[in-house]
Structure formats: C-alpha cells, structure tokens
Amino acid sequence: MKHVFHAAQILGSQRIPSSGAGHAAVNPATGETLEPVFHDATFEEIDRALRLAWSAHLAWKKRPLASRSALLDLVARELESVADDLVERGIAETGLPEARLRNELGRTTAQLRLFARHVEDGRLIESRSVAAAPDRVPTPAPALVLAMRPLGPVAVFGAGNFPLAFSVAGGDTASAFAAGCPVIVKAHPHHPGLSEIAGEAVARAVHESGLPEGVFGLIHGASPNVARDLVQHPLLAAVAFTGSTAAGLAIRDLAERRPTPIPVFAEMGSQNPVFILPARLRARGAETARELAAAITLGVGQFCTRPSLVVVQQGQACDRFVAELIQALDAQGGGVMLNPTCRDRFLAATAALNGAKGVQRLLEPSAEPRTCAVGPALFRSPLEAWASASVRDEEIFGPSSWIVTVEDTEGFLRLAGRLPGQLTAAIHGDEDDLSLMRDLLTLLEEKAGRLVFDGYPTGVEVNEAMMHGGPFPATTDSRFTSVGTLAVRRFLRPVCYQNLPPALRGHAERPNDPVWE
Image (cartoon, rainbow, N blue to C red):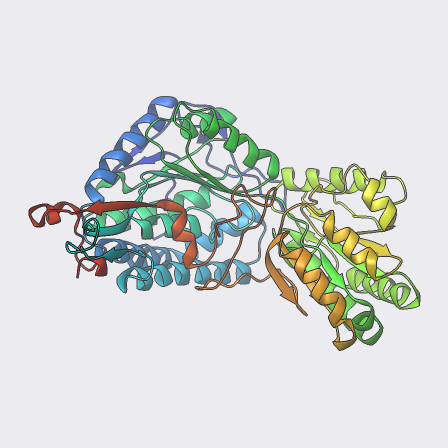
C-alpha cells in the first residue's frame, strides 16, 4: 500500500501535526515544490519526545541484550517492506537515481543486521571482570566488574547526502540502538517525506518489539530553534551529526553551553587529499587521472570522502596528467545536486576559489537555471598559492578538485604538515616512491582517520575495522568512528561494580552479557 503522509512529529505512538513554521521539499531535478508541508516541532513537542525517551531509557536498560538485536532486525525488515515507497520519494526529494537509492537501502539494512549479530555475540559490549583476591598482601583486592552501559537518549541529525544510510535508520541510529539508547531523529528538511516513511518503519519495529514507545521519535525542523531546543534539553545524553562544519560547530557549541555538557559526535568537512608520487605519476598518470575523475564526480561529488585536493610534482608528467584529468572530467559530465542549498554553496565556493591569488581555473562549473544540475570544476595552483589562500581549508561540497603542484619531494611533506584534520588521505606510489611514502605516512597518521593506498576514499566499508572519522575539524572527536561496529562506543559509558552483592546481581545483570558468566 502506498504511503499516506501525516506530515507530523512521531512521538512514541502518537502522530502530532505541529503548529510550527512550515517547510516543503523541492525536487532538485525539476524545481517543483513537493507536497505535503511539514512543520517545525515546537518546544512542547520536543520536550514530550525527550520525556518519552528518558522513560524508555530507564526501562530498556533493564532488558536483555537480545532486545537490542531483535529491534535492529525488525527495523531492517520494516524498511525492506516499504522499499518502493522509500525509493520513489527519495528520487523526488533528492534527485538521486533509483539504483543508487536501492543500493543505499541495502547498505542501511545490512548495517542494522551487522550490529544485531555483534550485539548477540557480545562483541560490542566490551565488559570485563577481575576476581576478588582476599588473601592479597598487604591489602585484599575487591571483586570488580566493568560493564558498558547506555548513555541515554541520543539525538541524530539526519544527513542530506545519504538520505537512508546516514539518516533516520542509518548508522548513527543503528549504533545507538545497539548500545541500548533511545533515539530522537531530527529529520533533514530537504527530504522530510523520505524521513517520515523511514521513521514510520522504525516506529512499527519498536511497537512490534514490545519495547517502550519512547525508544524512537522523529521531529521535523528547518529552523535552528528546533536544533537548539533539542540539543539543550536536559534529558538528552548525546548528539550524532553528519553535515557541514558550520552546522556541526554550532551544535557542538550548543551542547557545551548546557549546564551539563554532553558529547557531540559530529562528522563535518574534509578535503581528503590524494598524493600522487613522482614514480607513480610517470608510470600511470593517465590511468590515475581517469580513476580520479570518476571519484571526484561520483554522486555529483556529494560524498564527504570525495577527493577535492590532489598533490603532484610539477613537470611534463604533471602536465600530461592534468590534461587527461580535464578530458576525463569533461567526459564524466555533471549531475543534479541534492537540493538548492547544496547547489548555491557549491557555486559560491568554487567562485571564491577562482578568485584566490595564484589559482587557475581549468574547468568552470556549469549550472542550469531553475534546477540543481551542475558540472564539474577543476583548479590548479603551485604550493605557495595554496599555502597563502584564505580558502585553502574550506570544503567544496560537490564535483570539484584542486590540483596543487610541488617543486620537489619535500613539497609533498610541507603540504602534508600544514593540512587540517581529514577523514581520509590517499597515497599513490610505486616502489621507487617508498622512501617518500614512509615519510608521508608518518605525517598523515596525525592528520587523517583513514589512510588509503593506491585507491580512492569514496567507498566506506561497514565492518569491524572501519574508521570513519578524523582529527578536528573533520570531526569533533577523533577517537570515534561513525561507520562500522566500533561506532557503538560513542553511546556507551563504563560503570564499575565493586564487590556487588549476589542479591543485587539482578539489578546490574543482563542476560546474555558474558561478563556475568
């Protein structure tokens, strides 16, 4: 049955049509305003959502771990049951093609099930214990059990560029549920209808699981006031955010100004530099240029891991590489960006870079009136111009890249040393580049959360070994990942039980938690 929109806040079992300011999605491919109008959550609605979530937190943490894995499996199943509705609305609200959305839905349900399996076998809980040693000299040693407990209600800010995998039922929600934390999602204002369909699927899963209704809520809001009221609510325990640096820092500042500050796990901007070393450039420059063009334009450059900074040594091999890259980008062409805001920011950022001293524009981004279609952009400058440019550390979200040329191998190291924190950095080198690769590796370990060799960072695997994070300003906390099973650590807090009486084991014990066996 086709989804019928309520355009309401999802507050437990209730659907509340708000009286707040209205906003509607726009089809980025046509410029058409889409029905219905969604309304910003009021403070009273946000307060109700948090009170339900806090009550659910107190009840859920007494449940066995199996309740978490069961919920994750149910969410995956409910999403699959409305796959056609999700894809149809996703195409209209984001301009993304059907194949991309179906693949993203598969990624979303797969990561939910991955977390479910890891909860079941105890791998996500990381509890540990030390037996008492009453005969220890000079003092007896107590019995200690360290158990990981859920932080409490988590606010998830849905991302614009991955409307399924980083949104209502995406990785942040999956990892919070795996930790046993209730979730309140602030729907992205550019795909509110898609968010409602996904939110209703999650709400049905919560109901079917028998968990308290406050385990999940969904609120809408285009106004910054909604984010303010949500982040500063005293019952909120943590925030997960994916988006721009400006918005991420604003949310972090709101959380830090609370009487009781809370952690904000924000994934923000990154340039994801690619270092193409001299021997590799000479041997495989044309091939590398074609591969790079595909990575720059993948998803119209709207990946947080797109390679928007390329470092090469000047010379004839560099000139051939640049010519091949221009040709390949021309052949790739452009596409439709996610929404008018993304398009306008992309055009403004490329215009600002074009105005920087010593920067040459090699490809000018085209733009279609009344739609969000754009073409790729390419820039080139020597290292000195990059170093002095006021916009050098600004993220350009879209199909654009900046080639920086260095005079010698020391130039690679000088540039690497001046980079801000990144999500990723990539090194392309041959055997003759090994010495430089070692030196770069030492520097880039301090700069990025993931180092890619002879490849491109756009693909982010969801598994036990992934790190999707990095030093500031790529994220607000470089110790944590937002992708992969380690993401659950963001929402767990260690509690140590010393000499816990057997009679109280029922309070702390969780069936299936191996620490108590």
